[in-house]
Image 1 (cartoon, rainbow, N blue to C red):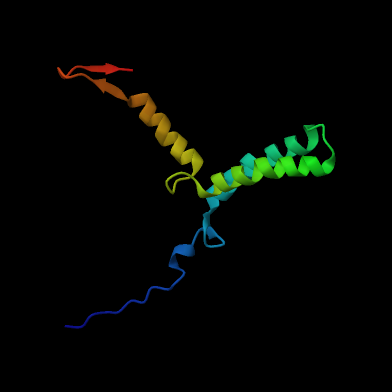
Image 2 (spheres, rainbow, N blue to C red):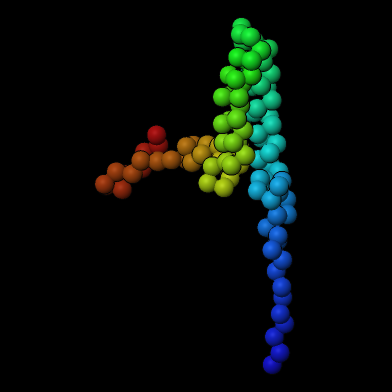
Length: 102
């Protein structure tokens, strides 16, 4: 009996990812969240430009990091859809077996 040997390359999980870490969907969501936020911070804050940049970085960098990483290895929109479906279909079960929609 002969067995075939298959070699799995070291970068097989990098397909569909940017820099081998972030999914393309997460990157698009991060851009859609951070670019308007960055624009609003730079155009609407009544500070000098160096203070605007500092405030923008304090807000935009954590927002982009959160969007890139996601929640439980899901993108933010995928997680939000799952949460919304759970929220819509949740029930309260009483000790007599009755089910009440909340």
